[in-house]
Every structure is written in C-alpha cells, then in structure tokens.
Length: 162
Image (tube, rainbow, N blue to C red; front, side, top):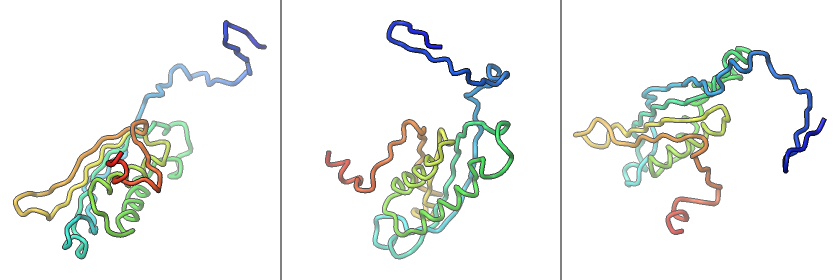
C-alpha cells in the first residue's frame, strides 16, 4: 500500500516491530572505564624524549549504547576494555610520538572505529616530566559525531596552514 501526502510517499512493508519497543529507552548507555593504564612510551618533542621511554598514564571512559539485554552474552558483542588496552599498546609501540595530542587523536580514532562507542573522555599524563608536578598532559572529551577523522595524507601542519 502506498499513501501520498504532499511530496512524501509512504510504503507499508508490514515490518515487524517488537511489542516492547515503546518501553525501550534507546538513549540508555553504559560506560567502559580504564583508570591509570601506565605504559612506557617514546613521546615528546625534545631530543632526550626520543631516545628514552617515559611513563604515561592513560585513563578513559567510553560511553557505549546499551545493548546488553539484546545480544548474546559473548565478548565479541561488546566493546571490550581488553581490546581497547591492546590497541593502545599497539599505537604506543608503533614508534615515537611527538605530541600527547597526537597520541590522544590516535586513541580516539581507534575507539570511534567501533560504532558502539558514542562518547569518550580521555586523559593522558606524562608522569616524570617535572619534579615539581605529579604529571602533565591533557584531558579531552569527544562524541562520535564531533570527532573528525583525518585522511592519511592530511597532517596537523597542513591543517594549521589552511
């Protein structure tokens, strides 16, 4: 059956809708949390930071669409903190990273490659930079909609020069 209403055509397909659909809150979320993951990394712009690893602490909270009651209870159906940690280790072990901001972008890019992630709070701290400070670093919050992925050919210098 097709109904025409001004410039809109509606086609009834007889699609099934769950009986409890109206009771489900599609805005429900849960968080995957990692606190103070401490890793050794080649990170920084100074000469000595390129030859000696330094400790970094990474904490994050990933807001995930709540599908817990809707899927089989197998790890592949969820955003796994183990996978997130393994991927962070891979990013750090690829080689030297000049800026904490670059590391944060790489981590966010990896997390948002999973469509279940809707929002991420990320804190990265270098732990041994100044004897007077416990740590230095950055804290950032991004949503999957606000996060802009750059192409492989684009880099920060090109963005800055535009």
